[in-house]
Image 1 (cartoon, rainbow, N blue to C red):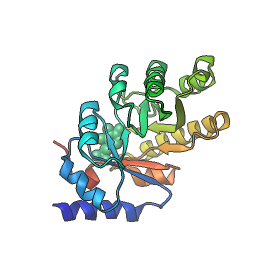
Image 2: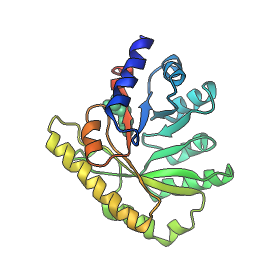
Image 3: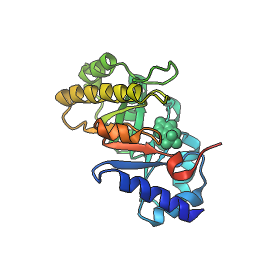
Image 4: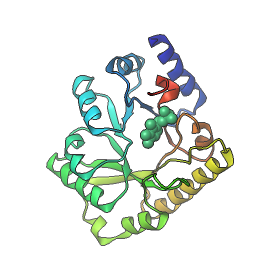
Length: 219
Ligand SMILES: *Cc1c(COP(=O)(O)O)cnc(C)c1O
């Protein structure tokens, strides 16, 4: 079991350029699985539930970089603010404001990605291009000194149609290009999961979030 985990991780690492950051998405998976990959040098792990993230942070080595990749409710922000490395899922000004407030209490600047809605599906969270860029240019945004916008994140439609997926990633890359004109340090493009990370990298991804290909399928 642990050997196959390491093999799976190596396969993904070998398939991607060194410049692309691999977030190992460990949601629902036990502490022991994370420890196995930690021992090989993997330090970046992604989770989508606050309670699980807090518990894993509590028991695992403190040099792990924890990424929040799932929808975040404002009221739960305070639980992760002391330690979170990157929040991928900023989808409202209200949430960004709350992250700023909690970051300030912890004397930190928290790095965040703006999540954009690029998929066909209704249910996925995220800004439209217009909403996201307006937020960055607003006066309210300029007062948030304890967050930094490190880039963008998006999820493609869950489909076998690669052309659809590719087009959505191209859309996110274009949004990133526009954001960079306003905010030159917002360089990260978080796109690509187990099923579509190769396409995402071809279209300019700098950070992929891979779960099941490494850890096996989730129940
Ligand atoms: C679960 C999840 C992933 C990883 O999905 P896999 O298909 O298992 O690689 C990536 N991004 C987000 C936002 C997720 O919730």
